[in-house]
Length: 205
Image 1 (tube, one colour):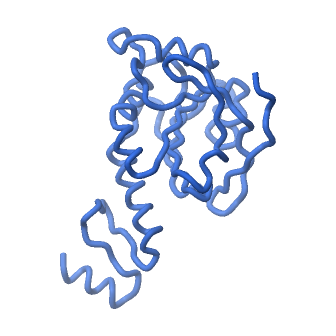
Image 2 (cartoon, helix red, strand yellow):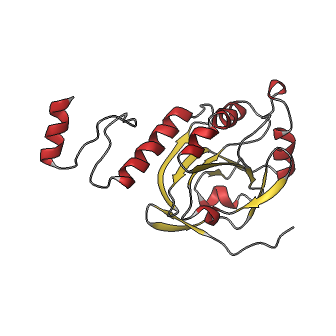
């Protein structure tokens, strides 16, 4: 296998955090390697952690994101799933049909974190259980984490809300003199972050 590459870094709201070296991941038919640094300057990344392969809530989330993968692709975003399972476990799971509890035709990679270093770096590792919390991070093209959530292990995440938050983030980065109010969706009215602009917004709703 390829030799490990130098460690990359990812900024946590301005603080530099060490993430992973080159990591193995699985698609439906093969294994390959990915690094977060591969996406810097190119794409946004949805990085989400889940506890274990061949479980219960996890496949519902993973397949839900896969079914909507094209919507993320259209706005220049890659999705990466991460768990502490081996690359062989990932490969077996994506080659298992959905009706049998598998992932079927998965549209994005699953990253193997058997050393638990990625989960630890992102602050989602449960040390006494050796698994990751249900954490999700939106990382912009500069490698900066702009949004994070952690769910109770028994509660699956919403693809709709992840996509909406990503769209709002991209909007304010493209329009730095505007902000997005609660529940904002593309095409809806934004707000100027000043007394005059906010009054105009509130008067119009």
